[in-house]
Image (cartoon, rainbow, N blue to C red):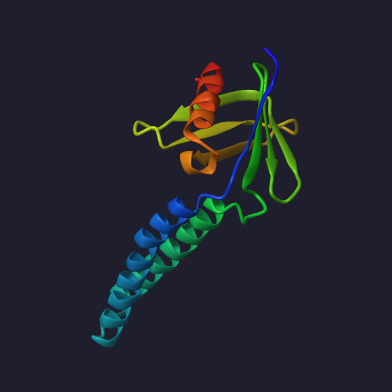
Length: 149
């Protein structure tokens, strides 16, 4: 089998949905932190600040990853039976050559890839349906990756 290559695009719709999920969560946790702090319950205030910070960082990473703005975001996939190569936005190329695993979600809206690169480091990536130019390309890529299930 020859290698199969596909280019990824920015998923603006998915990024918007993620923002609609994370922004109210961070605002709510931040508001609760202020409320607990000024009521004198500093322990819960610290906990809420921690949770708000965690969701802020996680949400920012997820949104920027979907929009392909992070240097570690994959912008292209090259799939063969022996390996999966990913081109990252920062210009690096990662080849997953050992213990490559493909994980499809139940809803069929994204999939995960894990494996070890040529240096022996474990890498993992999540790719969303909206990052493909069309649904046919997503299905074709998912079919090609089922070799690694």
